[in-house]
Structures are given as C-alpha cells and as structure tokens.
Image 1 (cartoon, rainbow, N blue to C red):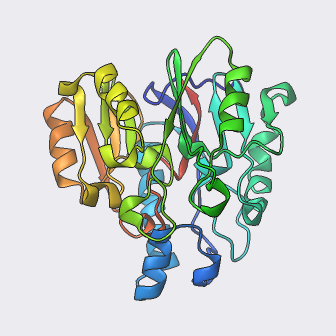
Image 2 (image 1 turned 45 degrees about the horizontal axis):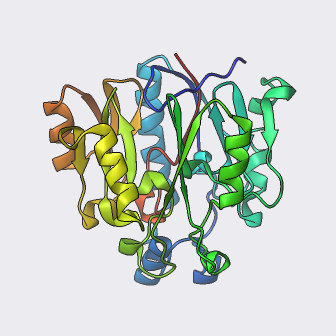
Length: 303
C-alpha cells in the first residue's frame, strides 16, 4: 500500500474505521481516560455497545457509498477499539505509530493486517519520551498543525496526550513542513473546559475553511493566528456547548463532502449554505466518550 496524506480534505480512498464490537463492560471511574466519559459513568448514561455498533456501521455505509476502502481492526474481546485515530496517523507516505496510554497498546496489534500492507521503511515509531495521539496532528498542505500542552503540570493531566518532545520529533521527520503547535486547554474534571485533542476545538474543511472553538486554546494569539490564516468569513465559530458535543470533530471524504452528526443543526446548515454535501449520521452515543467522527477514522490514502 502506498500511503498518501497531505491534508484533511483531499478525496479519501482508504481509511481505518474503528470498531465498537466487544467493547467491554462500562469502565469504572478510575479506568476512564477523560472527563466526559466520567460524567456519563456517574450519570448512568454511558453508551451501550449495540447503539455504538449501529452508529459506526452508519459511517461505514457512507464511506462505502463513496467507494472508500474501509479497513477495520481485529476485534479484541472486551476492549474499546473505537478511536483508531489515537493509535496512529499518516503524514505524506509515513505512518507514525503513536505512543499512547499504556493501557491501550493492544489496539495497535489489532491493525497488524493493515501494517503488513505498508513498507517497513514507511512505519515510524517515535522515541518513548514522545507522547502523541492522532487527534492532535493535522497535516494541512505546507503545514502540520499539532495540539500540545507544555505546562509543568503535564503529568497531572490524563487529558494531556501530546507533548513538546513529539512536536519536535515530527518537525525533524518532516523538515520541509512548517510545524505549528497550539497550546490546548486541559481539564481532568470539566469536559466543557477540556480540549482533549486539537480536533476537539478545531478542524480545517474544504479548501480554505475551518471550524473552531476559541476557548479550546490556552493562548489567544494562537487561536487568532488560525482565524487570520483562514480568514474570519471562512471560519465557523462553535459555542462551548457545541464544542462539548464535538461539533468540530466531523470527517471529510473530500473537499466538498463531509460526514457530520445528525444533531449538529447549526453547523450542518452552515456547511450546506457554503456548498458542502453533508452526510448526516447518528453519532451522539459515541460522543459521550469525548470523541466523534475524526477520532474514529484514520485515513491512509487521499488523492
């Protein structure tokens, strides 16, 4: 397989879509990785496996409708394998295997059948001190946008997933790209004040547009840089509630086709007004784990 990813929106040809099958029992609060999951565990509203399977199959059906080759992980019994973007990501013709939370390392083994199709020299494992997850990494033509957190209290946050060592390592891997890092707001306890990944508060769409949530950025000038880069008229600003519901975490099949959650009424209306075809799917149950459509897809090949 010849990998090719240079941005977030070129026509998609092949993707890994996670799976909700054999997702395991509801985790304990101690086992949860993010404040939104904890909120739903406490409330007794944590998503049911059968509902999440239906939601993911709806996405698989849309991808197949557009002739996208869809790979799925091998199912590991009683194991959460929904968020395939966390475990690896592709930039250009390289697949970078993420150093993720140790409890989740078996997820990488479950896509061994995909690795086997990729040349060994295209598989990159970063040094152990580099923490990174694919939700924080966005190739955008000459740029690579990366969400990070560099505070001294980084180790205290289960929600801080990408460190500055990983940012530096990715810059070294792609010296011809401009790596632009953004400090994200982190909270272990309040999901409305937590940008788990960059794609929880920002995502480029189309050729020159973006969805953004200002409060997800710790440094206002970094948020402003993005608004200026895309142009204020090309940016859809989402509210705190819309960020909480994961409105920035949609997924592009091409520059003009987007998979979005069916309840994102304001966003979906704006997208259609701006010439996008919007394929709506139910994904509100999966959103309860602080991840949505971009989190559960890992593109391998775009035009």
